[in-house]
Image (cartoon, rainbow, N blue to C red; front, side, top):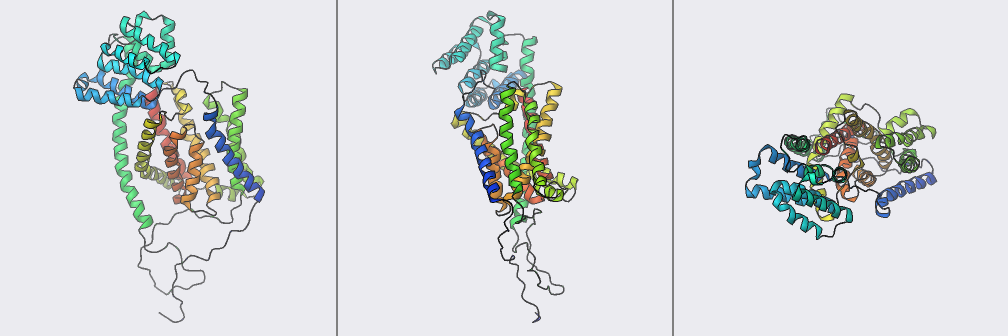
Length: 480
């Protein structure tokens, strides 16, 4: 080596603390607003009495019930064997967590075992001391299986369906001919679940295998290098023709800005606090407002959060960079990266789903979302659900969570710590409750990884949109 050239060093530049930018008071207030809002949203279900008269259907129970009923309607021979029938019975019973679920499981179990099992099932249910309304509905079911559905008057039939949804329809159609309108209306969605389940398992299985292969490949690329992905120190000369033979790990496109002002944290606090305030105001003055109108009202805090950094003196270029609103390496390449990144996360999502199922089984409750009440087979309602879940939510939430909030946290923290903080807050403010946190945190962590990998939030928006579109599709097929 020539004496004039210093030995190469791949150590990073000396750490210099970022300059103080923004107001410390604004920083403290922003964090107080963020954590205060999270505490209020997460704590409301524990301090407020539910005003719901009708418990929304359980997705797990409805899937298990419709799958069993649909399979029997297609081929009763499949359930004729003792082991097969017992397997489906166990599946339905395990999905029935709450008292309401246990009542709703009775018409399904009667379908599998015949009307002679109804008396024993209802006796067992009544011994659990259910609430008065469920006990009254249990008596209606007993009348149906002892005297027939026509023994109920029209008001009793309507009330049973309103309270017990598809399960009430299933009970009222028991014993009807297969070609009767009542029976067809019940069996058609059950058979639809069979075909949806086959498609889900096929697509999910392929995605799991491809995702697992890509996950291993990404891990090797990210962690497989033997030298740090940095350049020699500033001012150091490279020997002519020098090539470092050691492999370099994959570089990520996001570049933290230690000097980024705190206005991006302020913007996120405005969004989150405004989200809570606007929700309370809309519910106070318009108590019967629908989910779509509520989402439109929440456009106000979103717009305020986007404009805030500009009002605080940043240029639009700085605002766009902070929110991640740029094309990256090309829009179509970023879209493809979002799809690939989401598939990489499928094996991790499968583990999170398994954990959620276990928590649901032992927790006595199930995660739910208000969007379940919006599901129907009406065309325009379906369009609205897709627009809200797969367009509005990915754009707004990615701009604020993986955009502004992520950009602020990465000033001082690594991407794993930043992603963990963002993911917890993201999961805590969603209405699925504590049992939904593992799944939601996993989704949010994957999306934060996409932001770190690509720099632009286009990929995380695409991943978010794919996830929500699949969820809405399954809800429509299962709950519609």
